[in-house]
Image (cartoon, rainbow, N blue to C red):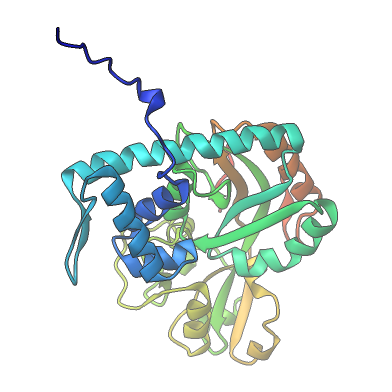
Length: 327
């Protein structure tokens, strides 16, 4: 008599060899398509990360990545499994976030992204405030362009993002914090530097310098000057600091956020700045709509409004809407 085989329920399959950390390694390799950069992101050696990826492939019985000297890409089956791995990580983080809500929503690790044209000028004054008001909070800071950080936020790789509003996405919620004025920055000998007052329409000339594509400040400058979003320029700056240096070198002029003017005394002989009436951007907090800490994030935003940096203006009615680039 032949014995019947009783199938083993999926819940009984042993998971002792499956590590969340190994799944994080695999997802990092998939994101960056480079083992060295993935190891740097994960804080391990490249050899250690590669070995753990190979062990996971052995455990699963699947080759996850096609590897050559110049090319790393997921195999078709690897892509399907990596997508499942992302869901596993998201579920694990949701469990941790739910536990944080019980223990104190702004305690422990908070992963914050800050747009590159804000972070170096805002974060130094923000950190002492947070250390005093939230002593149990540990921060992991990232700065980059807006779109990559919003993608990290949607993939649960960040908890909050400081960004220039508006940000529109069904999976994200946001609230404004403060309005940051723009100033016009000119080489000291530029003809426009001698003007007492400037209209935005006077800034659309060939000497207008811009950041390279991907920086929100580029789109903000074009919008304020009434220029098309894909306006071509021969010289583009890779960062706000390089933009400032180009102005100091006499290559042209640009719009600079107010907070970026701090500690520029040594440039007084090279650069002249002029205020612009009603030219400003709204800085806000962005988080995932599914995050159970929304109430805590809104309270956090209220705290930040109460501590708006000098020269900026707190948003007094955050629920009013309509915030963004104005000029």
